Length: 457
Image (cartoon, rainbow, N blue to C red; front, side, top):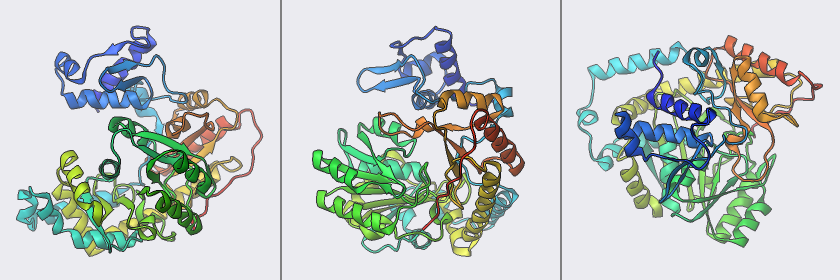
């Protein structure tokens, strides 16, 4: 299996940094110039630079260029630079994916066979987003109801998954220089995306119920806040499901200061018992998005972005310039599955699989202070006084890759030393072995402490 070119390029830069061939402050070629020199696409260079920015190896400065930082971000230990043989031998618990099995391959094969027998001409010839999306409006609304969103004074926009929806949502409510606030330990792609869009981003203090209302109020009182970005239903690193009472408090503050709310619900109906979404509590100012990628299968990149009608035209225009339209073939398959019940069958399968994975995690990590959710796709393990970077490197030496807590830190203030351990991307045997290695590493010097659970409301 060949390694993607963008990862090879990113690895070359990291090796040059480690060898002292690149040092802090060195300016890298532009995307276009490097692509020309290496005879590869500009997109490939961009993906390599994005990966290097994610781990803190380089930084992009608008109007100036891209520069080497001199060191990786605190807590970051990327394994993509490893030799191919070593990388393939890792039990990779760093990537958040749903549990996959033959059932998903079989359903996709059946869907593709059905398309060969009954493929609407519009799927092949679709070009105008408005006309194409209109045909799938009913199934979009049906799926959103499963997520607790009953459209009324809102519009639904079909996207190529969550990332596209998140980008459009941010571009719709905020302009370069505007301030967006979010959880202090939050969405790991929000930091780089905000930088690319020229937005200011601040993390707010949280407790076991999510963002503290007083922290949100203080932020709004001290400066103009354009949007509040939230993962309120189990999706965040700490797996917090925010109570209805806390949601109402935050809505009241958002209305007082005229702040938009962006609600990320990427797991969708994986949590069947949940409080009402912000999209229902404050439909006039909430942009809500979800997709089928995390709760059904990674290859089905179909998402739904719900926006207030007043922002509908703006959101559609932003989607046009960034994506033009969702891929009609994927949307056709998703809509058929929603209509015939396949989608719900796969969600229910995923709920059972995720529940079992969490039972495995609870057994393997018994006595460790990890946070979990009964049907979540990851656990969060605080490391106390342990050095995060050294812990991740030691785990890698044991053949296990985990995600550093630093990747999820929004604020510049010191963060808790922790790792995120994903449960869905490997087999049950690999998961058990990987978790056993993590447990052994954690208990190497310390006595075990009690486990804490995060329970859905």
